[in-house]
Length: 112
Image (cartoon, rainbow, N blue to C red):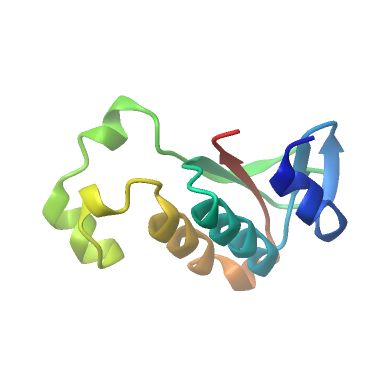
């Protein structure tokens, strides 16, 4: 188990050996820890229940469509220049904040 999961395992719902889902505030704390350790966020999966078997939303920062995201639109949505949020930390936090009162669970996929 990696360092981040060791720190947060008691705050999440275990889905597999190295796979946890978190409520919004805990997921944001995971992202902030990733930023402190300079680990990029690769994506976020959003689940309706703690069973983690129904993806409601997701974002994948590694796909080609994302890389082509218009920089002006990016700034309008996330209030940071696209090239300055190299780890996708601010964007990932905003993605969760937009859904924080939904009762959803979040898996933060990050650089190991």
